Length: 82
Image 1 (tube, one colour):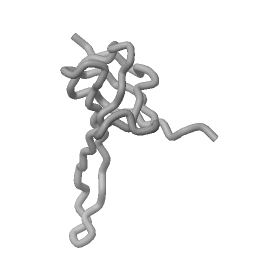
Image 2 (cartoon, one colour):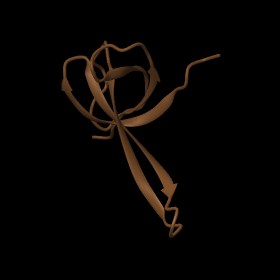
Image 3 (cartoon, one colour):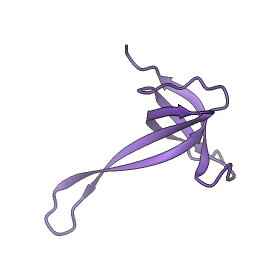
């Protein structure tokens, strides 16, 4: 079976071969039922260094590459508008 692929937005590309990808999801508050936005940040390996801030990228889990990097950028889904 194929690995899980997650789509998210690049929020930082300041590191060498690493981008920070943000995934937003909505959860329901248990007590009040209100819809809340939750954000998760993943550090992902970008070997080619092609991803830029604002790009939408697809990432997949991999072996630990560093202390905080466990994801790899597989493709750029959509480029950021200038």
